Length: 447
Ligand SMILES: Nc1ncnc2c1ncn2[C@@H]1O[C@H](COP(=O)(O)OP(=O)(O)O)[C@@H](O)[C@H]1O
Ligand SMILES: [Mg+2]
Image 1: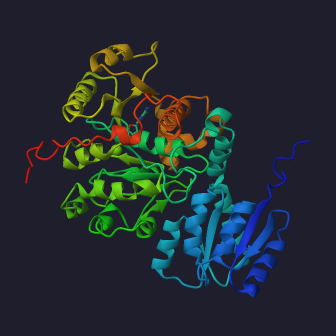
Image 2 (image 1 turned 45 degrees about the horizontal axis):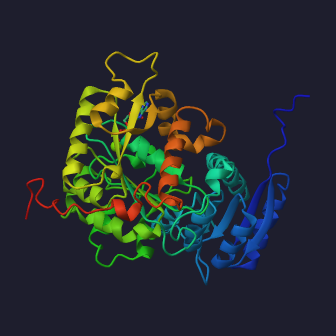
Image 3 (image 1 turned 180 degrees about the vertical axis):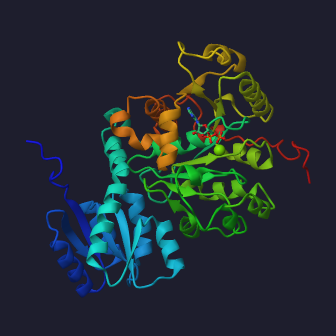
């Protein structure tokens, strides 16, 4: 029996949040008309209650009122997208102010419904949001199915504590443009996400950053808005300017136009901001531009690890070698730099102009920790969808290039987040963060 067209639909579990009992009842009634498809698993009357119930019930969708006493819908959404990324929030409001909308979207809400709610719009919105959230549910399922060995490893310092996090800063850099920094940064950030781990992706390519494009995110507030506030930056304000990708990943975008970058008079302020909020996250992944300037060096200075990206071409390897020498001169411990080779071709089909990996390792005097294969199809498709390659990780975990990205994320996770038995193993976060002290004036911009 082929029942494709009338296949029973998946039941969508819904939580209703509104402080007014009549509104909750009303929505519940509307949803009851489509009971084969929608199941109301609970209702809450405050933001706080919503958070509690979401943690327990893990609904697929929340219909959330924006204005509530106690804790409002925006704050509750912020918490929920962090703790239960599989839940998608649809915000409900009488207001049409764009400011509300913007705040709700930044908190991670996926859609906006106007009160009073129109039934057809309600149904179609739930269906669309549920469908669009599928890659996220898939990613989370994949995380749950992760090899036990990795999933159960004990996280290091404070990772289970809500206040102080491990604060690992991973700066992704390549002196050659188009090497794949943004591709690697987005996939690494996404691949590092797992239960209980907080990850933030920052676009520090201030002029031509394209993390927003890769993840289809647009933010009103960006890094530029934070720079003047370094002195009295608090975590709450910081959280309010951070955008949330549909995967639950927190993202801080760069300025929307290249010239806005000029508004940042002190480029090292970016590193200042990152240091300040570092311990609210377990991992902060920073995407950078190819420019070798004060901004970059202030970032590599505070980095726990520098992810140095090269491609197997002469020019790229030469530039990578230059950076390795420079980092040596800056007194960075060798382990601080982690080499990644991108656009690696199959040995058999390898083009004659690309250089074999072993030769590159010899020349750089460094081991290459990850090799990301050349794969236009998958990588371009992911960019077009605005979802990192690894967000499709469930079935493809063992397939290239998901495997390489995930293995690399697991490698860094294991190195930095698990309590190693060996004290003398690879230096931990703090040890590798040895400030150079000779940075000032290095680039001839001494004050
Ligand atoms: N391994 C890869 N295989 C195929 N295409 C890739 C790969 N890595 C990156 N790309 C593509 O190359 C282009 C440049 O990558 P990007 O990550 O933007 O580099 P960068 O940030 O270093 O300038 C993008 O179009 C991206 O989709
Ligand atoms: Mg880039």
